[in-house]
Length: 255
Image (cartoon, rainbow, N blue to C red):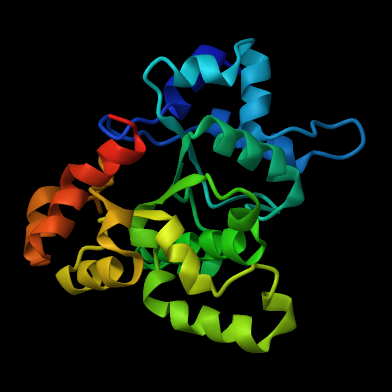
């Protein structure tokens, strides 16, 4: 493919004020490079591959107004819990970079190929699966300074976190994280794109108002046409609303 590092910078750079863009084959190239980490293939994280191609240290870009990067929920057979991504998480934590998690596509394929289910069902499921990999694999334990922002309010995970806590208590394979999964909801940030006032109130209740930031999902058709009004419809307490509408984002972006 025609790999253009300058275009990749525009695709990958994320601030909390610019509109999101659908990533193309360049993003898939970066993520698939991790999946090829065998003998003779790249062994670095997507960010490292990119910055090597661009020839510029990552800290330099983040110091020029870029808050961080946007990633998907998986890449081929590489989940976010994959040990090959440890350099990525370590570097993101070191730089205090925002990592915006937004699924690009759905792994459930044919079962969701009708009725727009790949989006309405698939996107929240992808969010929940990706975040569960980060939690249960102990990624957030090893890298407590990570700034993960999950699109779509984290999908199904926040409202069904009790099931994850139960698994952590009774299943040995679910005990690789140090604490109950619900604990980590207050170490992740979530956007407000849940399309339901009750769901937004529940998200604030389980994660905390300080962990929710205003989101629009622009320019996608299922985005929120008026994000501020959507927050108002949830009838949150004034402090939580103020945090969501700008206070929290300003704090973790250092504005």
